[in-house]
Image (tube, rainbow, N blue to C red; front, side, top):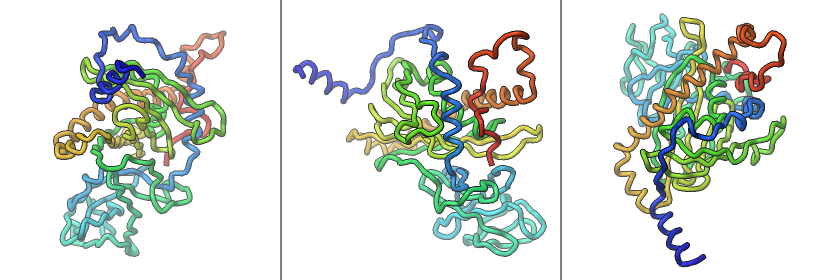
Amino acid sequence: MSARGRVAEAVKKAWPFEVLPRTAWARQTPTYKQAAPSVIAAAMTRSQRRPSGNWYALAASTDITSKPLGVTVAGAELVCWRGTGGALHIGPARCPHLGADLCTGSVDRGHLVCPWHGLRLTGRSRPDWPAVPAHDDGVLVWARLDRIGGESPTAEPILPARPEHPRIAAVASLSGACEASDIIANRMDPWHGAWFHPYSFTKLEVLSAPPEDDDVPEELDRFLVAVTFRLGRLGVPVIAEFTSPEPRTLVMRIVDGEGTGSVVETHATPNGRGPDGQPRCTVLEAVIAHSDRPGFAHALRAAPMITPLMRHAANRLWRDDLEYAERLHTVRQQDAEGVGDLLRPLNGPTPAGRQNPAAAPGIGPMG
């Protein structure tokens, strides 16, 4: 490498940003030809066949305190709290006495106290109140619900590898009218990134996608994407991979560029049906940032100021992506009811790409 090349490489390492040209949104290279519904559907089918161990992500670890927190998974109401020494407890939110909502109770000396008649729950199972297996991975809290999951249980959730310390983690949570499979299908389409989120991504190119085969080796079952994260007129180019270790999780990991090893975990938890009869689902997006730069360790001191910004960015993305996921659910519902056929040509082939990626064989309501 020439002296000029070495200097350029050193500058690139010290300054990972590039100035982005002004490009009109509509002048981007279209990606609809590359975003083949059959590829997305095949990846979804493989994802939905993987075991989950019956574990469901509930909340950020920091959200569970000595104040009871209520969550609903597939219609089951749960109450979560921390007892003595920060021990995590999860169980039915229904008081075994007369059905009071235990989420409105209080914690006294580590015990959950019902607000109606003072029944105390230690967090351990009793004949009329079964404690739920719980797991705190340091970023997220999980509950194992064997009757809902219906699979062979595992001792712990099936988690992806996460970056070593130092790291900064932030968790965003939003809910929408769709199913968990619609959330994962959204992430199985990396081609939409720069079109649907131009404020966050640009210069996106899917370098490789998994084949449509029924059986794909784990190392090939990924989407590899070159993308530039946008910070105003500045951009940070990286290469990222998208994988799905279990049916309700999609992981984006930076494999080259600034922040190599950092991950964004998207977890989808079905809540049940709303008053309108439509399914509800909660997205938990865990952003776990890491950098090998010496100065990153100092950023930990500013974590209380950085994590709200990370959550804000994730919330902004998922406000849009929930519309995408909800639309997937609507289209699938229209197709099931035959409504989608009303606008098809009377004597013509089915339009290419009509199949919804979340409607692949074997994919249906979660739980």
